[in-house]
Length: 508
Image (cartoon, rainbow, N blue to C red; front, side):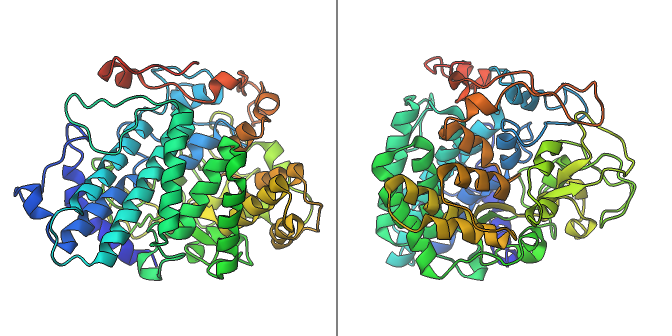
């Protein structure tokens, strides 16, 4: 039931586009009247809030780069290759995968996307303090907590990738610069903010179907646990565990009995979905000339075979670009009877098509293209698949809780871990940290979780090492670089360094 919420996004499209002109830090009101007069109705405040949600849709393609959130993380992990046509195709991804990124080859558009989101959230928090006679106190509180949560989401993305970032909670004026905080200082700011949002208890544990896509209390709790665990903040493990237990005991979420159905259109916003980023092929406004407009996603095009001959639900001649081929070792890591393998890996070994770089003929089935999934797009169909990006799932809640129970020494971690394994068709195992991390590896292939798990657990230095390519062309290069602690934060783009001479580059 994402259509109604997508319609709200489309209704706010005019405001969204005018808020991202020559400078994403400047905004003009679409009606031309002063902002203080425009933002005096509940409907107009809602426009601003929906515009603040809008940048979550941009990363897959916009502002000159492809930055699908799951790909950005997976290319630095150990389950996929980068692919594409050659090493120069999305060169920044290849360099990030080899831990050789620099100021000219990094995730530059992701920085702009997330700061656009921060700016829009700050707008909402400013506008709700105007005199808005028809805005109820309940609506005001809801808009405030949604905007504050979204702002943490955008900063959380920046913190994960760049670490040491400019930080501000009120919008900037010329020359549009803010103090650059260390990664630890950013964490300290964000985690206290999340605690305040959670304590307010304003947001519902789960929204109704008409509002799926809005940030819920459960989504706030998941962000909190993710950040606490990535920071290895032992002082907050108990609180994070308490939040996971609240989600579990709420009765609002449950594992989908059919793992494969999670990735079908009918599986979107099922009982397991805590938060998804909505994409819609019908009535699309998004096109190659308007990448920031509302519509579908290019992700299935990015991660599929080139010159597909037809079959398996995807018409011949379909446009696939061959990024993110699954390593054969990833396919082989699933034990016999694990239903997740065939739901995760689209194995087309034996099908003839145009081979791409590092091509293993195994692709990520979770987001694979199907003709039915972009059939309603009016134009630029390869940019407008309707596959929602699954961001947080109840399976992660269970595994977070199991891990946190072991780390605090309290709770039935084994039961939670084995609920996930039972759904996968597997038998029980003991609850150990190693077993939980391995279960996460199997459960979340292609969802952008693995790399962060390797970094936070200290496994990155031993796992993320030079690896020969296992693709169909034996001459293709695999990973040649080695991850080191200095690679935890990726380089800041040269354009950002040029715009603020006070910015300090991350070590690389």
